[in-house]
Image (cartoon, rainbow, N blue to C red; front, side):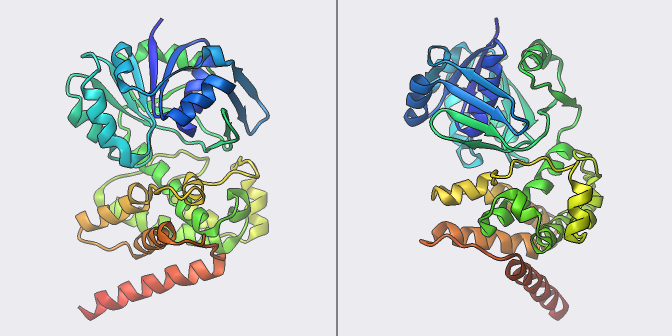
Amino acid sequence: MAKIFIYGAGSIGCYVGGRLLAGGSDVTFIGRARIADQLRDQGITLSRHDDSRWYVPPERADVSTDAASAAAADLVLVTVKSAATPTAAAELANVLRPGTIVVSFQNGVGNADVLRAALPQQTVLEGMVPFNVVERGPGGFHQGSAGELEIRQTPAMQPFVDEFRKAGLPLIQHADMLPVQWAKLLLNLNNAINALANRPLKEELSQRAYRLCLALAQREALALLKRAGIRPVKVTPLPATWIPNFLSLPDALFERLGRAMLTIDPLARSSMSDDLAAKRPTEIDWINGEVVSLAKRLEQTAPVNQRLCELVREAERSEVRPSWSGEALLAELRAATRASSARRDGM
């Protein structure tokens, strides 16, 4: 049986790895001592928004705090936060066998490139996790939204496809993952808005003012992607270019039309909101910051996403967690857009 290693035993890593374990795969987790102790003591309890449940007993939870254990890996799923990718790449470069498959199941669009540069003898693939996972107590992980795993297509990955299918995690394969990654990132632009709102996702998205904030951020990103010649794929029932208009609908109409489209656990929050709550650094530079970086490469500006980056960084430094109202945040983002236009017109 193929040996699968999860490098990064956080919420996503434990959920995906736990599901693979529950499906009968041979899985080892590599993570911090806190998580290792929890999994060894509690096992892994998994749940999903549709009330599905899985349990992996403690004796089946193989956990290591040493990356050297990955020397036995046939497949490595990298699920660490984006800031830790260079460390992951350096550690794995010292231990992986040539030919090992490495999949970046991370936010952003450039983590696989960082891994690939450090792992020239391995096959590094871009992957995408579309759903939200939250930690619910020691060893407990809950999938709060819908979606299927997506990955770059390559013959080298085919021996593992059945492992994911048996776990109920079928892989959607693509020849080119960049349009898929950008499609996911467009949706993830809401992470910052949700973190600043300090509300559950479902509650936040039920309010038009917050949705208008997201529509502004998405329209800005879509204009830049069009200029760059990148066409995001359709990862929701609506094409990416239609979503800002859908978000702008009145609350009652949005709720009625969106009920079949938006399957979100009532208590789920974005990972960025969870990071602020735990006083951890966020991934803002790898989400909204990617839009800002794209704008700079195109010699353009991205005032909405730039301001969201600034507000999240301010929240990271603040002793008091901000809770922006939708109206106040929308006014802030519109002001940033007007200021940027004024500077451009004055040049």
